[in-house]
Figure 1 (tube, each protein chain N blue to C red):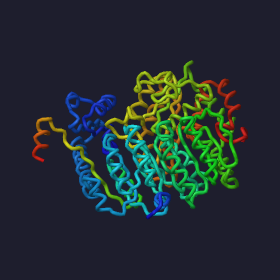
Figure 2: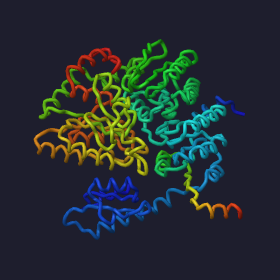
Figure 3: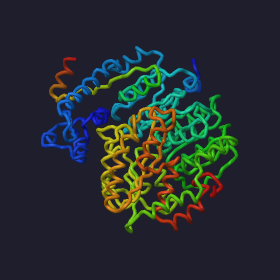
Figure 4: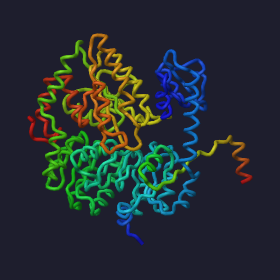
Length: 60
Length: 523
């Protein structure tokens, strides 16, 4: 198992493999630099009124 | 807002805003005199397409071009950007992921970051509006597990030669940077690059890391990692003025445990920090780079003189010329910056030189602008502050808000000089200089017709390796009549000298070494 010190310094000597979460603009910059990356498109859960939300909770 | 910039390049279009109908965007559209009755009724779920055409242009053709722009942008998204809907799915599909770049709303940032850290993935956290309590919890967890939590509110890192979020393309080398100041990191990296020194790693730890509450958790871990890193020979730590106790603690750790030469740049530092053998101190980004160049010596020190040295006569020569052009008694400086560290550095230098200036992010509350949208007297404005970026792109990406503010500032005949930063690199606007050059030319022309001069000073934080090309940006601004400076600090000092020659000159001569790192004042 890698020691604590190793993890950061291992990153420094590794090829970056990046998960981009949020702004697509930053994903584009990563790709432009030839970095292996994927993008996560975070969507907020829609807000429901309390009656609906309670009903769903009972079903689920 | 990129699409607005693309729309403005269509033949026949004078001005364009294509944006969702949020309150902020609608205000912007009003300020550009593009609003209509229909636009006023738009909601935040409506897309507003506001255009001003040149007389005689083919409106049908323009509208078809806009439609094509909108649909090609959608198709581009589908082709280029396959995406996952959850972090879990992304991790499953990319099991060798070693870094995450997180730029989500602040209330989502903690859970997402912790999910990634739990999977052993280092995190660069761009998001702001993360509570100090959550920041401390994330950083303590990261530290216990030997991981990086860079942020929150971290605009920049350079890891293994790759730019993360906003970052310049600089040469690889052996200088490590730890920065609690995003554009501070960029300025140091770029100035080092200009004198032939490259970067091993540049780690943005977030603006709160050196506060009392966070206590430098990630700064210390990064310094230790760089001390251990064989590819790093020297370390620069950059921060706006940190908590005094935290700063002292970190400096003590550095003196005892770091074997490599270090420069601590506490922008605007008040404390008396004495330079030692391996640990030196600088009060601004320019002098930090000069001090590091002197540590390396030889060619690097020579290049620092070639690239970053202005004699006192040269600075006064520029200031004197501008003073001579000012017709009226009043003379104000207005700074419109996209980088918060540049604002902080400018205000800190003004403070050293006895110049009072207001700001939306002042050094002391006494000089806080009553309304961030309206300058008073001398004002240095951070347009990248959260106030201006809610619901809209950062001005480093979208120049519209700065262009509008520029027009407003120029209409005040008491304004003699406008200061601008242009930040190049990955993540930034494709053509920062080009996006403002025509406006600058027009404003200078209008001011001349009114019988007075308006001067523009600029510092370009960039390299010739950046996508936007430093040389091309310099050419565009020079052609527009902008006076360029190789560092933000030089720009700030020169503008201060315009405002109050005798007072500033006396302090400048006395504080020269502290401000610039060079002993000599004459060329």
